[in-house]
Amino acid sequence: MRVLGLQGSPRKNGNNDYLLQRFMEAAEGHGALTRTLWVDRMDIRPCKEFTTCEKKGFCPIDDAMKQEVYALLREADVIVAATPIFFYNMTAQLKALVDRCQTLWSRKYMLKLKDPGCRIRQGYLLATAASKGKNLFEGLHLTTHYFYDALDARYAGSLTYREIEGKGEMAAHPTVAADVAAAVAALLKPLERRRRVLFACRENACRSQMAAGFAQYLAGDKLEVLYGGSSPAEAVNPLMVEAMAEKGIDMYFRRTRSIDDALAEGPPGVIVTMGCEENCPFAPGAERVEWQLPDPAGAPLETMRRVRDEIERRVGELAARLT
Ligand SMILES: Cc1cc2nc3c(=O)[nH]c(=O)nc-3n(C[C@H](O)[C@H](O)[C@H](O)COP(=O)(O)O)c2cc1C
Image (cartoon, rainbow, N blue to C red; front, side):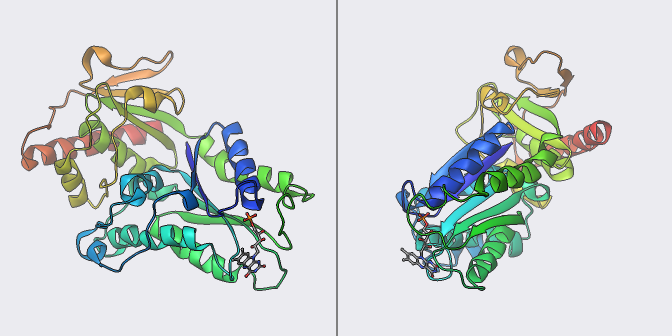
């Protein structure tokens, strides 16, 4: 279970720093792997309206978004944005990241592709503001709603605090600890109940990626899907991305992982192996399933399609049996 924090405040030890840190600690208490991005310290450039994303599905700007952030957004089960109100909305730093998610909006609405995590991903908002007007958070809620929609995430809720200005004021708030604990429990408890399944192959570039993509898409609400390779390739196979796109599933931002990385998410109850040979993972008590499938690496698209269809069939049967 992966929780990604987006810190929109530029202020270290400020109110949103406090809020997001408490949120992430609580998430770790529920077994989540957490990562926080300090957006202000990253090279994230504003959208230049090249509209390449709307035509071709990618952004030509080469910065932290391309290098890492799109992939992290796709990998997260829960995304939590934290921001002070600056002129009735989020900070400009965070808004630049949001605007660059036009790429994900385009892949969803123009290219009509579905992210494998779309059934379970949730978005959450933390925010503080100095004043106390009734409409203080309305602009922020609206922007956040459409941001999470572009990320294929359900906007699950928010904790917003008025009359919080100087450093340390959030920490002194009487209900914040209980508010955060309740919010994190409501978000993560349903995800904790899922059965963990690991798909492993050699390079994690084709077979285990496709199996994981189908499993997340078909049953991500009931299965926590891990994936990895015994000898991971640098990147996923572009023909795999193409073959999955033919099925309407978007694997463009997927990254390969080692089996050890996959196991860091927790011990799987079921391990499905596809040609990782003597390096196949072992977990005590886990059910082992071996799928004999040809390795489509280096083969033409037609082979990738055949392997994809066979994996889709097997994942459907496995998901029906396990859920
Ligand atoms: C540029 C700027 C704009 C702000 N605009 C507003 C605003 O429109 N309404 C408001 O209530 N507070 C506003 N504030 C105050 C911050 O939202 C508030 O101090 C917040 O708690 C700071 O959070 P942080 O410590 O996490 O950065 C603004 C502050 C700055 C620096």
